[in-house]
Image 1 (cartoon, helix red, strand yellow):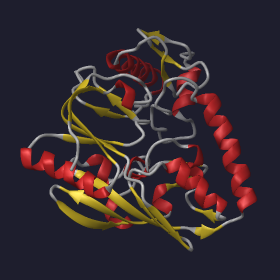
Image 2 (tube, one colour):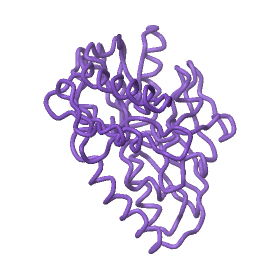
Image 3 (tube, one colour):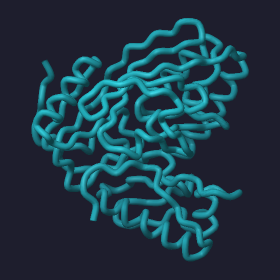
Length: 287
């Protein structure tokens, strides 16, 4: 039986440390409890949202009018090159464990925070790899029914998927097909990437805030060329360390962060005629 809390402040569940109260919140550690929470919301006809590591979300100052499920379901199994894993398992931890076994295909995630479910929904990627390259299938909750989707069913794109773009679908578990790699080479690759991430994402951030646009220049390079590093609105700041990172440096509100987002997008569009799209997932009501 799941335990339900009411009027829970959400700031501690986000790496940005912002957000108002959720009407209801439950933390689950098993897939059966995750499904029970989803059924509870479905039967009561109230909105729900799933949060894993909280590393790629922005929660409204008004909170969330519905049920928040903190997903900690974390059983996994590795058989040869096949990996089966619950959606609440930590992506970086699984990536590290597969590297130790000399398996390539999830190695790029060793420096990426958050859960497997969130990584799949957002088609997380780094080092020239992404989730779509090795995902075989997912088991999902789809508006009251459990179904299996193949890789092809998910319409993967750059930092997006069918699951991210459609409400009501929740990843329960996933299956990956990896390949044999060189453990030493993989380890060096991810250690260098981890060092870069630690240096770039210092502070209370959600990692990279904007998707990279088409073209040769990244979102960070465009923002940096405008001299916007260190620019502040309220308690939110464009990181001096990486221009595609927004930090909460002084009790920022979600509105501070969104105001800074809008300022950046308007400046980039005005100067370069490029429309930046946030990578972060917004939860709750934003005006």
